Image 1 (tube, helix red, strand yellow):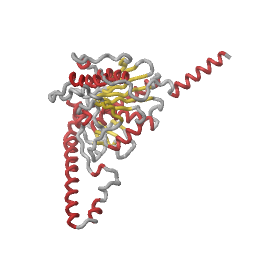
Image 2: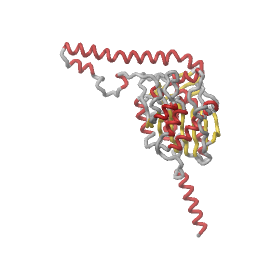
Image 3: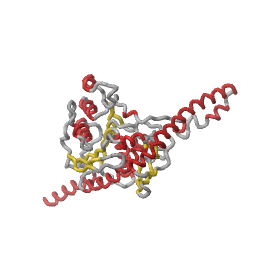
Image 4: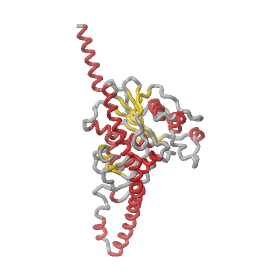
Length: 369
């Protein structure tokens, strides 16, 4: 009888583990958890000078240790895997580096459909799936980076899952945060479509991330990450979350909108009013459309040869005809205090003063629990 009880208890424990009842990650913001993630994020890529800043040194992680660092990929991108040796891992993506090709990823800001396929060197196919909505569109440079990185990331996720790690925190700062947005969308859609086990629990902390997609991407992302499992942490004095440059035209609206049949509305007006209204509307419509064409030419056409030179010939899906970047997902906006402003005074000659891990960690430390 005693043996039967032991067997029953073992079966229950095995079943509960399989169903995810042993999950360590929880929804919501935990200050200590976020700080630990930031300590890991700051070390991604191994910049010792950065973390050992004279005035604002960044503490070492207390629970996690690095178990893998990738080779540099695409636009000088890199990712690492850290583990607490207790079933939880942190998957962290490096942000922009000092290399020109790294910044090329940021500037290559034309939009692509949020689901598609890239062809590298005419032979290597890289598919990506960031949203189901056919109107969703995302940043081209960061889509390329994410697609290349995911070829290395996906097998590692499969491997650590088989070894018993079912809780994974995704994080990245700045450009790394932008890529982390798309990576989050990719793994969650892979789960949704049966390409990753559904009992992997993903939690995302993008920090200082810029905007990565249009409104329809935001709708899809917010639906798939709801209930407190994905955040973008923002310093309101940081300019990077305000990027990229964007423009909205009448074509960015849903098919049913006030502009769809505007000519019919004009016909209902008396002649003098009709002429004046049409002239006014054309002027309003013309300038955003001209700005869109200029952005696509400067941030797309003129950079394409540089992109090919940096990473090899890349064939993209047809560009999405928009540059309407909006913020996506749940944001946690930090509040700069007087103490913070003394430690990190605004200086127009130091444009990254409010953007560094050091600044963000100082603000997170001020969060009242």
